[in-house]
Amino acid sequence: MVARAMWKADLSLGELKVPVKLYAAVRDAKVHFRLLHATDHAPVKQQMVDPETEQPVSSEGFKRAVAVDRGVYVVLTDEEQAALAPKPSRLISIEEVVAAGAVDERWFDRPYYLGPDGDDEGYFALAEALKKREAIGIARWVLRNKRYVGALQASGGYLLLDTLRYAQEIVEVAAVRPGANRAPDKREIALAEQLIGALEDRFDANEFRDEYQEQLQAMLAAKAAGKVVRFPKAVKREQPDSLVASLQASLKAKRKDAGHGRRA
Amino acid sequence: MAEEREAAPNPRAFWSGTLTFGLVSVPVDLYPAVRARRTALRVLGPDDQPLVRRYFCSVDNKALGPDDIVRGYENDDGSFTLVADEELDALAPRKSRDIDLRRFVEREEIPRQLLERPYVLAPAGDSTKAYHLLAETMERTGKAGIATFVMRGKEYLAAIFAERGSLRAVTMRFASELRTPDDVGLPRVVRSPAERRQEMERALAELTEDELDLKLLDDEYASALRELAELKRDAGRDVVEIEEAPPEDEQGTADVIDIMAVLKERMGGAERKPARAQPAPAAARQAATRAAGHDALEDLSKKELYDRAKKLGLSGRSGMSRAALIAALRKAG
Image (cartoon, rainbow over all chains, first blue to last red; front, side, top):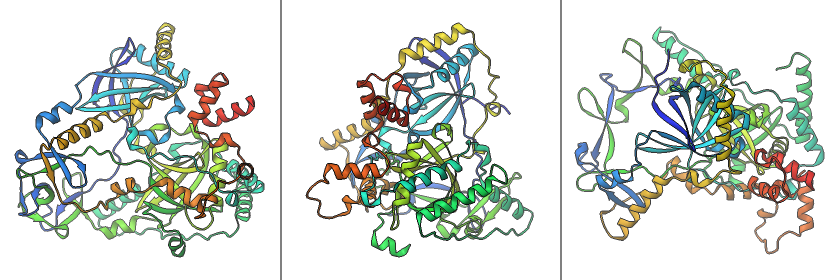
């Protein structure tokens, strides 16, 4: 089934414009539960109540307030809230282009596909150009009253737009180095390099399955069919006592594996 | 484990586990590396009283407490399969605290679209040597680890990154959670005419900057919201005081914890000593860093490395990874 586009916009690079459609790249594959009233199994609903009286308050009576300090709030009028909302626009504006590694892993939030919308040549030309330059575009746009910042990258010949977190959301971590008494010695470093090398492989996301979700689905299917399901128990791990000994033992085990085929 | 926790009090780690690769184990504490945006508006009633959310039955409109609510999975025919907490607990298959480092890959090989949520890994337990060894080696070789672990009853796939001496985990989506271009219905990739490609390359070149302008990542809405609120507070307009307990939720702790203090406390030899009137002599410090298998360049941020490369006029620097910058700078002497 072909997914429906969430939005149509123009991708702008300076003077150039490429018309695109936006699609969610994340598929909601997880099992979702609903909360039900225990006696009649009717779905529950949520309402805002006055905690003093436990009486529901209708939404016409709502005021919205922003915290300025602990326990101190300022109420915003509807007009003030509206004034804060960004102006609607149909533009995804590429503000700058940087090396792909310039945005580190912590910033990436949620991926979307961009698809061509009338100018396939322009769309695929941009994907190729981004790939060739090994670059990403830093994009900004407004969608449904919200401002977004994102990273535009080429992936498999297509354009992907990942939303990025805001700078204020990232916890900064400065450089930390071990004290002299804790620094590993030459031998340990050499062994660690060997072990990492032995465990090195290509990354293939398809090799990893969400076993929890699979078991959850199996359990639901079994329950629907009136069966009982059993699951394996936890495994306990033994703590090795010396770092060098465990590095060496790991390497030995790994070499043995290698003799019986590439992957353990 | 319990004794270690008492010796080095654990300031509310999000989760604790053991990073394992081969037979090596590295005990770690997990802290969130992102904090919540403070843009949520609180809902007040007509008399400025803060409102709270409550559950009601959608049929008989009765107010429901936690004991009146069950969990149901909606079947295709609209009926519900009820699922108890114990059944979900039984599913959490391995109650192991291992973060199982299954393999190492080139850092650049990890698709960005899989990345979900970042955490800082701080060394835990008595010995931090294995932590340093792993962090230093991964960073020097430009490798990332791929790990699986079970946290709070759910299975996670994560990428482990080493950056500036510390380890991070970023949880990842499973491949099954991502649509393919086919799923979305995107047209087949076609090669565009050379002139269109060149046009795009020129447009990209014109917008190319050597480094990321962090101003582009400013949360303008949050700033505008705060500015307006503070202005009104100072003018004494629409100010409401509400009695509040200190935050105890996970969202709150991310801001409260000083991750740097945790890392320094756990890592440093020198930093641990209470009396630190004099800095360690430079020669001793250098010896320490040499022993750890890196030189002063390793302590610099990517930006600092980049600035040095710029000064030396090293070509191709804007496309270089941190490791490549270090290598190029070493070569340049």
